[in-house]
Length: 313
Ligand code: APR
Image (cartoon, rainbow, N blue to C red; front, side):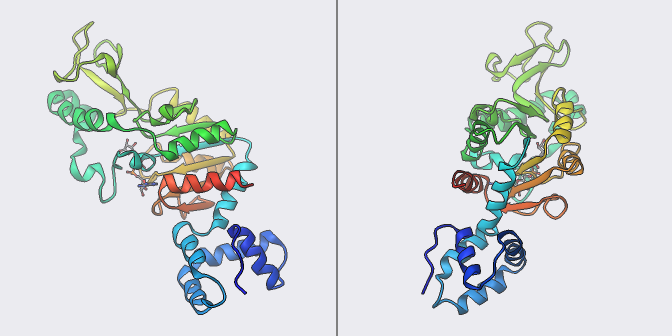
């Protein structure tokens, strides 16, 4: 007689009781390892059981997210955490229409990143501003927060998230409502004069005539985000290092872990005993190195499923 699926964890408990296997955690962890180890093998077994158990409900879980049990583990970790930091990269904004930098459809496949090199910018500001306006203002400027950004705001409202450290310069975490956001690579929302240091909100600057100049001293304005060859701004740099010390859970979303020094922060957190939950459409530099739970999939879908699991507890 096929079993009615309330939620996958309960489903497995029923199967285990049926097999006379007790002690939830130990057994589930074994199942976890098996599930993640050999989805294909399991699928073959399931196919042979087709008459007994509806295969559909198994395959979708395994194939899409590495099993609902991984969600249960992620939810348990978040619920039992003292301090949670979300560490986000370009991947969280992909579903807002902003491409990643690396990977097949990454920006660096279409544009030579030299226009974001500070020395090249200082030498050829006109040429660089042409590219900068096209990508970061005409294009990025239209982006809106997506379900993953809003889920982080909801986590904050549920007191399950304290801080967001982002490598993104798109201001979407703040637009989604998160109150503490450290912009590790700065922001496109402000421009700064290279001569007198005066800051302008982008809405105050006319980007028709390029390069835009400072109305006080005539100096060239530069977007207030980190160019290659520039240091990490304060307070983002020291506050992020502090969070890597204080937080006992880091939630990594959509980052390849390839850009230094930002990519060191999750390793520092791990070294300080933090547990790492990772969300990415594919394995990153962190997945087999420090991640305790890897939820494979698009940030919006995974965060929605994680919120469901948290709300179901
Ligand atoms: N959901 C979740 N993850 C995704 C999604 C998605 N929809 N789409 C892509 N990803 C993942 C990719 O698999 C990749 O691991 O997002 C990651 C994006 O990697 P990068 O493009 O390297 O971006 P990131 O890690 O944020 O690099 C950061 O690079 O050039 C600099 O300053 C720039 O802040 C940027 C920095």
